[in-house]
Length: 461
Image 1: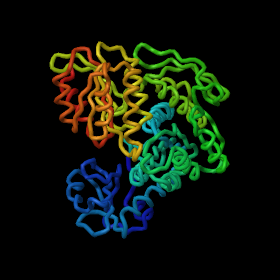
Image 2: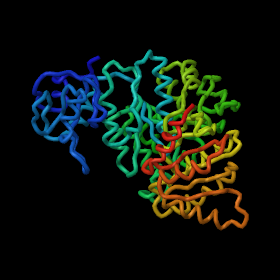
Image 3: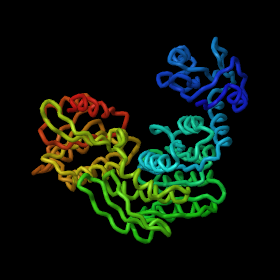
């Protein structure tokens, strides 16, 4: 199905159409181009997309947005990054979809994916969402430009690590609903404290359409600050959480044998019983935010419940793999995409609730913690003890302080090793592996711990 014609693109970005073409998708990475896609030749600090135009065309691009003429159908503009933003604005303007923006210090991607599953199912595949974790100044407009004109719902993840970023992103997305999943110590290298993080997250409210809604975490210490910021934008405020004082809360939670939950929830003036496939209290809370958004967006709560029951694990964000590797049957919990103190504590806690003959935590460093890095890494010891972790494999420079802390114990309860890279970690774990292990792989994405998961999956039975 045609997403854009060359004439529509030219009008949207104020460019000159050279040759006629249509496109079915939009991409800025030549390696991700599919047949019929529009290629955006973006210029960044590290690379220039114009160098990859030939690759994009060979991979099937039907046309390109460029700032230098090429011998192929294209839209000529002065600034390709500005053109991307213009195309995003045009996409938002031409579409009557109900738009939901999701931000927070943790849980953004999972909440976005759960919302998409719920609304796509009830709208008969008329929902759109940002893929992967495309949540920055490039990813958000790219995701908007990919939204078809007949979409009924649009769900967009929005992230930040500096003040002002969410203000700009929300102005492009212009959501009907803004969800803040939680406020926690993430990107604290760039902020004085969590109050500043909350203020930066609250910038999302500034782009919400008049009469829109803010869905806020009642159980969070910064709820009142978020509430005040949302009120300043004259938004309807809906709270969610495990506390029964929240507008949307769990009346009863029954843990399932597979790690999920059976939840009886109060959703404003409605009651609902639904199953959640994802494990952990943080997922219970985020599912309540999802249900609040579905209700406000006019979606079907019963169908949303079915979608949450059917959700599989997200790659790098909780997917579970039963693997036979070199004769050992192990369960791998893939949390390799990201890590901050809040998510580290939640996922290690979930490891502790998982039945195992031996619990193993392969943990990479948590980035962007500034001068609080040592403190937050040292706190991990208590999480490991609470979860009764048997063996910890610590990866990265910032994990040295935790290794020294474990070494200093007179009677260490937790066996451990420390190394520098994901490859070293894989080599060490291969030599330490035991049948029946449950292995949590968790760390900041730059360490590449996903390679450990991929290698272990190579032995999947």
